[in-house]
Amino acid sequence: QKEVEQNSGPLSVPEGAIASLNCTYSDRVSQSFFWYRQYSGKSPELIMSIYSNGDKEDGRFTAQLNKASQYVSLLIRDSQPSDSATYLCAVTPYNFNKFYFGSGTKLNVKP
Amino acid sequence: GAVVSQHPSWVICKSGTSVKIECRSLDFQATTMFWYRQFPKQSLMLMATSNEGSKATYEQGVEKDKFLINHASLTLSTLTVTSAHPEDSSFYICSARDPVVNTGELFFGEGSRLTVL
Image 1: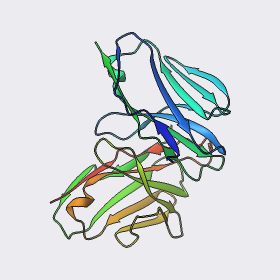
Image 2: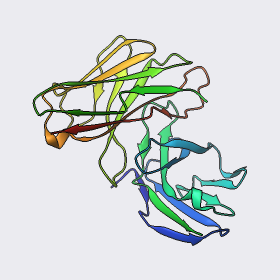
Image 3: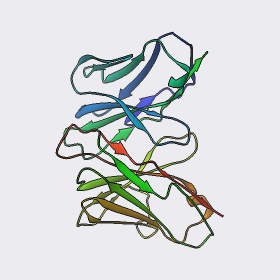
Image 4: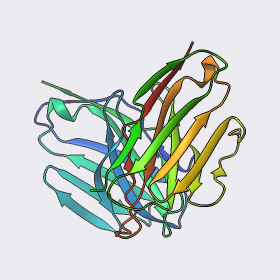
């Protein structure tokens, strides 16, 4: 069983719509959760981090965490073509000694 | 956020040669750095954890003698792909977190694309 599971997509949404990206993880001791965006041929860049249950908003991005369900999601409001990329979910235990990445979800935002 | 710099960004080499990739933390000291490998359209695969002043910790299935890691200072880790072969062609990415900030975010280098002919 993979540590972190993501739907590979591609997820296609029209410009201006809400994109919803989901991630589940298997290790209950995971404490910190991150969403990274990776453009083709580039290295990942951090979008959001979330550490406690509930929602965390930053601009057009909202991360949602439910530790009981071992589920973390990322919502992108008012999606733009520039948001088209692969989104990677990452989890780590409390001491940050290991980061587990999902396989990523490819998002296509159509103009 | 913290800055991690990686060099070279791309390299082409002949089969059998060795290639060194450098990873530097520019504005913080990193006692630990992580080396990832990524094949096209696949996710990041952790190869090894580089520890300053001590031996690297390799993931299962990663050949220690082939992928030499040295973390000689708090700001520099190197990955040497020895006797490279075409199947070693990949995108290699290093990362580190700022232990002072200690929020856990991983900051990535720009990545190094290796092509072995």
